[in-house]
Amino acid sequence: MRNRHILATALLLVLAAAVTASANYASYAPVPRTGQTTSYGTSDDGALEKGIAWPTPRFTDNEDGTVTDNLTGLIWLANADCFGTKNWTDALNAANTLNSGECGLDDGSVEGDWRLPNLRELASLIDYSQSGPALPAGYAAYFDNVPSTRPDYWTSTTKASETINAWYVSIGGGYMDASHVKASQLDHVWPVRGESLPCPPCATGGATEPLRPMMAFGPWLLLAAAVASGAITALALGRRAA
Image (tube, rainbow, N blue to C red; front, side):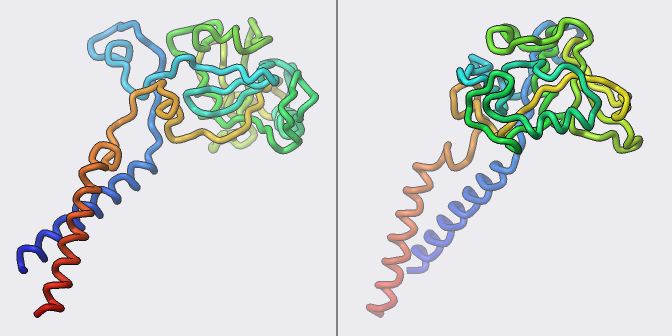
């Protein structure tokens, strides 16, 4: 009887630990690769290619004026330069009021669905193996009107130390900076909508997902739970009989 009690307790503890580990894993934000594959030094980025692999294809044309990034799950306006250049406040307003019927959109979106991307969202489009523009290979099959000269794009992220400035991303050079003054600088606008998912390519087969405890050991844990349940039942029946 004592052995059954120990077995049941041990199996339940293992099951609880696995569930907790999987729950903690779900809160991770996987870091994608940079796209750089050429090595310029020992164990540099191009040599190691660390991070979540990019899905193939990287983008999906939704045929409604929008493009889904299969790496992040974000939905981008297919027209990369619908609004020309604007100061930061006007850029925010242009993105916030965008709706279906404008900029080639036929997606049923309404004002408030779109927004100016934050720094990390916009930077997620950068391919650090490319330049002029620094976008993933094949981007032209999905996006229209990417500027060929000085393609700097506003983000919605303000510079913390100088709040009159905001961060921008140079799509041409593949870098970020916060030297542009919100009121006077004129940059391009690339609206986005949707939310970035923890690991969308894992669901579409585009990347190798890190091992999850519940996925790897799920069948065994279910068996353990069944055995533990049987042990507990037997223990209870044994106590009743006693």
